[in-house]
Image (cartoon, rainbow, N blue to C red; front, side, top):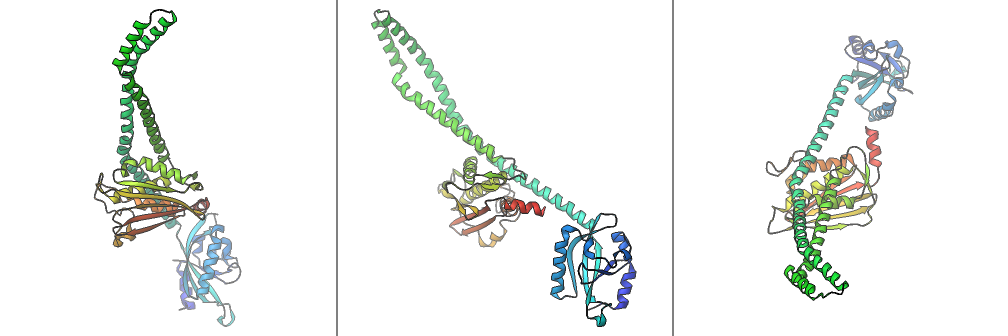
Length: 424
């Protein structure tokens, strides 16, 4: 339904809205404008008339504006609303406007055979500013929630890591005390051996010294010491190596992350995360690895990738059952290169995910765990990191009574980083 000339006149004189009549030619020439352009754009209506409307559109918004305008006209509707865009104010600043467009017969065209567009412009600059502030606050809040989840994960792992470090530390300590006591027993033997050697060199009667040394060897159980000392040294070195691997894995897992991407070996990231989370799964399941050798490096945020792997591994372990359950489950982790992506599959032999909640598992704060066993942010953060932050995908395969497999695919290169920068 088109507006009558009388209705247009009332609108142009009302001053409550900013109206601009645009032709359909190149640059959308301005045919008329209401007096309220003084308030919205800081200029007189006459300054707009007979100029190209698109000259005032922000360069960054121009392509989208023109595309939306053409699509709207092609749709054949009398009225449509364009996406918000910026117009240049007389003082050089930019004003965000909402453009509610009506298509009307061109009063200047003979017989009304042509059309023009009447734009009802609403200044939404303040609304956009408030929205941008809210978006920034939301991103800040999301970052804080992600950090809280990360700290919670580290806190949950702390007791297990302490246990994993404490066990080898204990037998290193026991073996060190054993070596100390053994050396106390060997020291006199070494002294007697030195005296016997000196007697032989002086061509003295060494029989008495040799008999004394033999008695000392028997008293010290030298044969037993010869077997146990090398074993104690070997165990101690293994324990120190185990502690070193845990510390290195924790150091890598605790990578501060941030916005920068680095080239990461996915297989190494999996192995480090498994080491950090050992206490979470070793009493519940046997872990099977099938990591493709020579996997290409992945451009990603290392800290976020570690968080994804940890959440999925812990989730798999918790799905299998309680600690020290008589019926052990199985966790399988597979990595593959699939085209221009790397894929990691993490499967468990738990009860599977009921069909009625499968569509909600990635929702923030959704959890089936009892109070105190997680915030419900784990899988939500996995989805955000994989899909939104890295342009990847995450799929779910599950069958009641058979288990669940999460399939994560991430692009190898840094293309998504470029896309994110362009969007920001």
